[in-house]
Image (cartoon, rainbow, N blue to C red):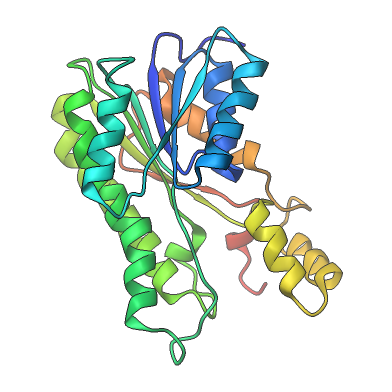
Length: 259
């Protein structure tokens, strides 16, 4: 522990599993007071309890919230305010995806993905702004390489992540005068529960696992901690002169001309 975030309050959406959980753990390790948002109360409470057991002096608190609903976001921030009067770091990590080609997509599918991944990030950012102190803070949005690289079956997800990059850049410009830095991280293939479920649903999981591993010049897929450590960098004073950027965390996947 280097206490890079000592005394800071961090709010992480989608913080109960995978990348979000890893970010919560790293932030807690670095001294932050961490609040995690999510829709699954059973998983959220379990994650908060597990992380708190690891570092009892820095409890992680779970707040149930569905980012599709503005009132639930307001309720979550009201709950947070019972413990702290500020938020120094916001991580917009909540996101969902589905595998459907354009012929099979419905308007309801489109609305669901955009509502959670993009509208939710906008609403949470806007609602959290009054909690940032005059000294400023940091917002980190978790995007995806899908924002700039096309894959079959990912249209609404890709559009939501491209929108998140645009949201990042515009918020970085508008909030600079308040000393709030806004950056984005775009991960590639990361080994999470969702990825494992996708592998299991494929006709040949072992072959797909090997194919995706081989796509990465570094020789492996990413881990949630890879994204979490990069998020720590962008949330800490180590990146004090960085705002409006989109940082690729993809093991070199997208530099290949012919994958």
